[in-house]
Length: 344
Ligand SMILES: [Zn+2]
Image (tube, rainbow, N blue to C red; front, top):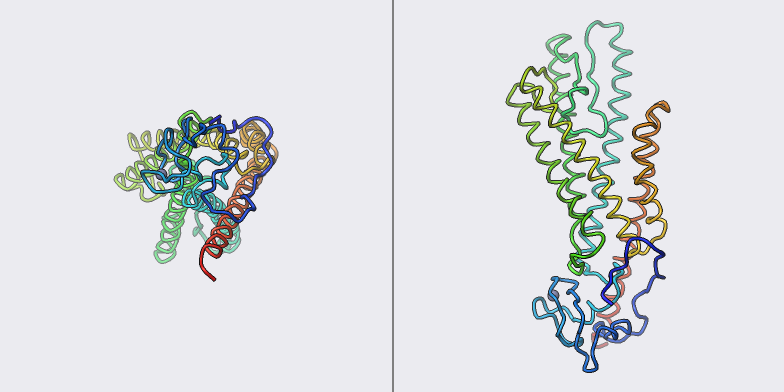
């Protein structure tokens, strides 16, 4: 009875909050199979707010740990029945991931056109060249992205260029951190989820890889600074530091790929709980299409990764819009409840 909707299979119709203006803590009809004749919870069920196992308690009581009405935790597994604090965090997480993607794209465009314009202007002026910004996706450590030409030019122009290079390296590292923080929030555990849920394993992998990526980012930047290569590895680097830097980059991309697959599985698990069939299908599609577009698709004038990014962003957008709608519905309902509870 306690089964969480598996990621596969059709999703049930959305079950909007009970229209009856009764108490918020009314025991939902679907809870009856998990109650005995006296109204005791007879199956394992976790509190939506604090994860406390409610088995053996009375359905009309309160969670002994946090005081949340037990009836609220007996409703089905849709996200609309999850704790508002949890929904707020994962909603914020998706938003930050999307924001990081948008800012990264804008910066990449600015960098690209900046280089073109500087190239045109600089063509008639000699050796000053504006280094490229670090391309997406970037941790600023990839040796192949090391911009060049910072030392050339006049002393004043050189200083300006170095400021731009360091500035863009710093900004792209900061954006990468925002994206990672977004994923950290988005992959937060729903207190009501049990260890056996299908989404738990991918969710934990997402969280683990986020930590690994952040650690690699810190280590690689520390190596860059220690060897004098500077932020984002914009200077020159030799020997052991070069090897460490390359290993960091390699590990980073492995972690990134792992997180990608895990995040698609996690989103697929989340989809029936939104519920959103489209999200489920896109998550499944992106499991194989994303990697294909980012590898084979590069051959198509480099458009593959761009298409993958759009499809990926759309998927996140659908999830964000649904989470926003769910939170709005809950807010409205709690306002109505407060209104009906308060004396006129
Ligand atoms: Zn509780």
